[in-house]
Structures are given as structure tokens and as C-alpha cells.
Amino acid sequence: MSLPDPRALLARPLFYRMNQSAFGAEGARRAYAEYVRARPRDRILDIGCGTGDILHHLPNVDYVGLDLSAEYIAHARGRKIPGAEFHQADVNDVDLSDWGQFDLVMSFGVVHHLDDQCAERLVTKAGLALKPGGRVVTIDPVLMDGQSPIARWLIEHDRGEHVRAPEGYNRLWLKHFQDVRQHIVSNLLRVPYTHCIMESSDVNLAG
Picture 1 (cartoon, helix red, strand yellow):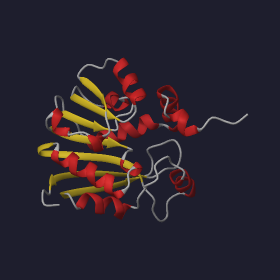
Picture 2 (cartoon, helix red, strand yellow; picture 1 turned 30 degrees about the vertical axis):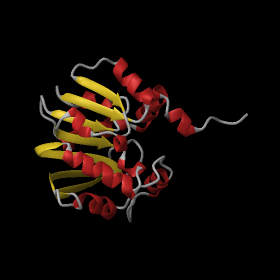
Picture 3 (tube, one colour; picture 1 turned 60 degrees about the horizontal axis):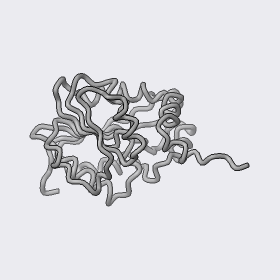
Picture 4 (cartoon, rainbow, N blue to C red; picture 1 turned 120 degrees about the vertical axis):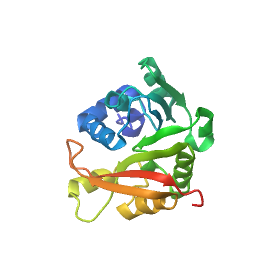
């Protein structure tokens, strides 16, 4: 009897949330929210929102979540979270202006699933969706010299096939934003792991 494909299992919302809990992803979301620094009544666009778990760590905001998975979106909608709406959509195929402009655009663990062309498209769209003075904050795994061998092994076996080195993430964002801050953190999960948090503002419209 063949074992189920872990990638197929992770497409199921309940298994996805159990897996996230086992690795301590709630702690990572809590720390990530400190970089997001959302304020009450901010308009937030969450690209790749999953089942909407980040909302546990945000104040009362006007939240729009997008995800490619219809199952994740159905699960998120079923939670009936006040002030939140969820849409099943591929960010490459939608016009984000349909939902207006946002104080914050966030993306938890999405960019490392995208090749450079798709990642640049996301970065461009995220920038255009911002209000003046708005910010984009993303978090993804990162490969770098000197990291824990366990962290490197886990990251190299991640479902995302486009994990970058720190300079790879920097290069992607600096092309489109004038103010880019990079934070490398290695203590967000219960297991050794290295994350890259990108905090970007001041859109470069010529980029």
C-alpha cells in the first residue's frame, strides 16, 4: 500500500493547520505580525492567506484575503471572522485594484513558491495596491551560509521550489521599492529554520 502524498495532504485545510501547529507556525505568525505592525482599521490585503490564521495576531482591521486554494478559502469563510473577506484567486490573474487600495499588503510564505517572473509580477501588483505611505511585508524561508544543517535540509525539502538567498530577495524588492528592509530570523519555529522578512515601502514606479 502506497503512502499518501504529503503535498496532497497539505492541500487539506485541517491537515495543513495540524502540520503548521506541529512546527510552531503560530509563533512565527505572532512574530511576523510584529513586523507587519498593523493598526486598528488598517486596510490589509493578504496574498496567500491560507485559512486566515494570521488574523489571530492582528487588531480589528479591514482584511481581504486571497488564496489559490478553494479548500482553504472555504475553510476561512466558514470561520465567519468579523471584518474579513476571503476570495479564491490567483494573484497573477486578478486586478488587485478591484478591492481598492491598502495600508498594508502582506504575504506569508508565498514568494518562495514563485519563479522570478511570477514573483516580480506579485511585487509589482502589491506595490500598485498600496495607499501612499503603505508597506508590503513578506516572510519566506531563506538559504544562507552558516545556517543550521537541519534548517537547510528542511528548507531544501520545502514545497516551494524557489527559495532564495538573502541577496535574491533583496534584488527582487529593490527593483520596485526605494525603502527595503531585510530581517533574517532563525527562532520562529520549534525546529531549526531560517526566515527572511522583507519590509518594503516607497514604490518605485519606474522599476
